[in-house]
Length: 93
View 1 (cartoon, helix red, strand yellow):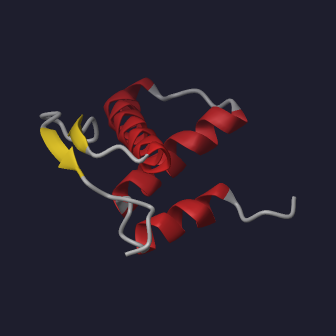
View 2 (cartoon, rainbow, N blue to C red):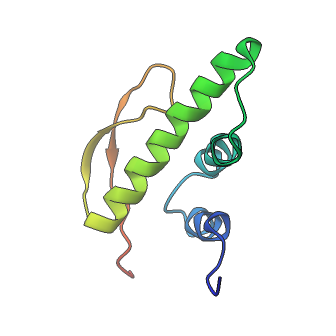
């Protein structure tokens, strides 16, 4: 219990320009229902799916930061799932 909440850590990464804030919001949207065991309203399935895809993109970016990967990546948070170049780093400049 002595560490900062996950959302605070993610927001710190976003503030540093390492990850996108829209991905943090998507994570928050999917995290709470998943952790609390809430079901998904069938009328909102598209929105939930998009948030899930953005959360997947967030997790990819966090792993890339940890392992030091740079290079091509599929951005699942975008409808067209475009290929982009991921070039962020945790190393101090």
